[in-house]
Length: 188
Image (tube, rainbow, N blue to C red; front, side, top):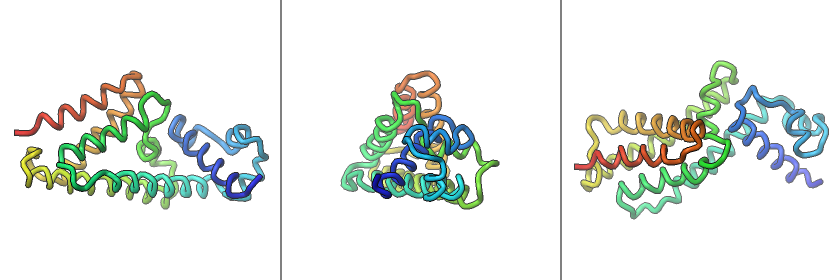
């Protein structure tokens, strides 16, 4: 088996398992069973589970950042918000997964310091992007943001993460659409 393919498979399965079960809900044995390799092979690529987790989080952040940056910058702010929320809905709804950052944030006490920082970076990047979009919306008049845009962006990201969790809990993707509807009705 190609070593890069093996490493990629390990990371893909680890990400899915974290998103479905949490960090403490899987072991190298689970991954080895899924791929059909020995656990010692996983240790070759990732000596400790923390090494695997950090690599998964960093890769996830890079992919997610690229997806967010791919949202057309010429769109109005409300259209950008629709695209952003839709991206979340398409990625997570009708799956057993939630956002990797949200899954790990719930287990913060058991995470290594480097992983905590990486999760904070994911949250910070999303909140910063949302703040820029909200500022644009205020300028162009497509959104009404009561109060500080930074606070609104943090609240919106927290609400989005929560809506993903409840969408999974109730197997109802409309919970994510409800969030978008609530935000867009704040327009004047």
